[in-house]
Image 1 (tube, rainbow, N blue to C red):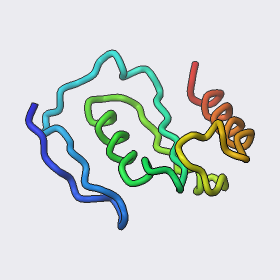
Image 2: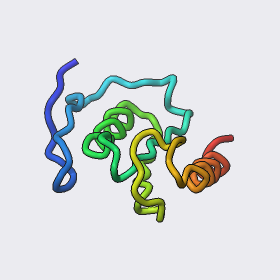
Image 3: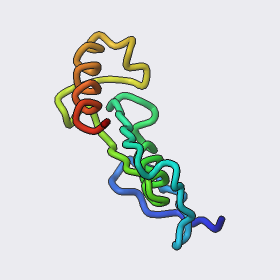
Image 4: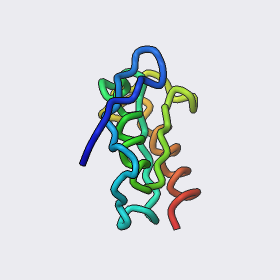
Length: 101
């Protein structure tokens, strides 16, 4: 697989390593909705956009949800331990209800 580095989507984000086109397809993932939920204070926040791009490129349906954009502020990556974990659970449950058959 030949790869390249894409430019960051925004300031403060890292470059992404992606497949050269035509990208190899992941046919087993094409019908499985994937959510990547990211808290603003998570160390993942700088690169989870790359994970979403990497999975989308071969055909997966991926949504990157920045929790702060959805009104859920100040979270790290261990969301189940956060003070607002019920807000996060409600958001995740809503996404699952809308996206998983």
